[in-house]
Image (cartoon, rainbow, N blue to C red):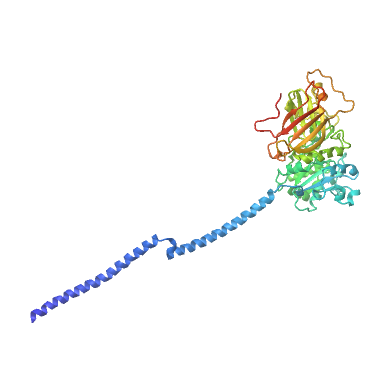
Length: 528
């Protein structure tokens, strides 16, 4: 019995040790299992797509919130950008006649005569905006503009309280100098430019817009030109826009002028005219003159042929002093009628090209031809260089009668350096539009030989035919080119298509000329 009891005790001890080891391993195994599972889950989460886990969903919500904020910011930026673009577009829109208001200085004493010039260029029925400023009422004061074909008439305010001490001038200069300010105070909407001129100033409206569109109307601009007389510029100023030739003032500058002008006028009682008073105020405002060669004061006497036949390569904007010089066309019934011939003909067809000079040569006859489109053609014997032809010929006299030809503010030349070179002059007789051979339309202007009464041609021994004896009319073909001033300024190319032949009796005494944009590498000033 004692031996069986000992063996059972050993087995109990062994079982107890096994149970202890098992109980010890179970927690370790569970810990190892859960730790391994955690690692597996973490690895799976990192390799799964973003939208398959809670963390990915959280990130998506965060991204959506961020994107919405970014989109909102982008919308705000886009709105601001669109507003800026719209404002820029509004500013960049082309200046039209509705953005311009004219202030025309006139006197009741000369009104019946001078109003005929205004009727030539003014566009009634609301096409243009402006006022004639008079010292007192006239017959048209109470008439409608539709009936008169003139701008509205206003009476200038009293200026008797302003001092004026110049011995040779007239105090109406003070009244006229205030026209821009008085026009500004009318409060017209949408005005970008205030343009001033005299009642005997003729404006070319389309060319005026071409010039004004080159400038930013939001900036202070004072645009005009000088006198043709060197002495006039010395006596008054080389920095002054002569009022008769017309000048333009941008709206911001007109506003500044209206605020300070009355005080400014009291500081300059000894000045002569209205335009030098304007310039004195501009000097105080710190705004210099922006010169443009298309504004013409024409402080000259005599015949404008030499000046207009060699007009600067720039759009012509104004003509002044037409009562002082000879009529533009010698066969016209009156001076206003002569100007009307321009407006009823070539200006309707191609305003940008009016008065633009082109130079070419008739090699067969050895003639030099100068075309002032829409006005006149000059034909001279021999070959004259373009350098000489683009210089105005002295068909006019200085504003100061005793001054000689050296008293101009530009270069001039004699009409002919040799009697043989006296040009034959052909003035515009008609202008029309016609179909061009290669499609589109072209202008056809015709110029007739003008022979003054009792004219005698100078004797000449040159072995060159006299154009006066062989040429009665000139036909010029030219396509309208409204974009001519958007390019670099340059004379049109000029080609003589046909001309009368020397020694050929009878037949058509007509020369045909073609004007056009120069092709690449082509030059019109080729001396034969």
